[in-house]
Image 1 (cartoon, rainbow, N blue to C red):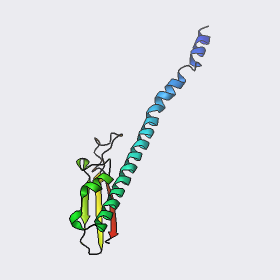
Image 2 (cartoon, rainbow, N blue to C red):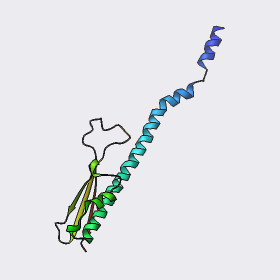
Image 3 (cartoon, rainbow, N blue to C red):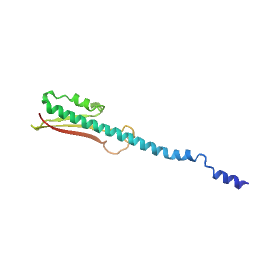
Image 4 (cartoon, helix red, strand yellow):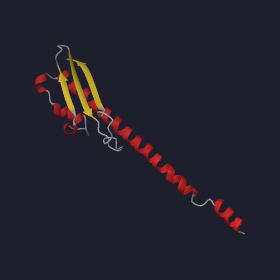
Length: 132
């Protein structure tokens, strides 16, 4: 009689699904968070590249006296100078202008800032255009 009850308890499958979910849920959440973080990095990289292109276009069409870094910063939206966005125009060449925009990335979703992994990645966009 006792052996039948023990056999019934050992073959009971109730709660197995909840246990499997508890084991796999953190892994699935980490994968989703990584995907969101990658999307944010990709969006910021596109903004940096677009801002560099816009700045080079402005500098190539206008003379250096009319240079306005605020226009380039608007092109880099939602990144701001307060977050570390730097815009460097270069008109050393007489035929070309070069604008470099850089932005130090800070992790938004994944808690990787607290780990000692070295310097955070820096997103850099550079554009060169011929003066008109």
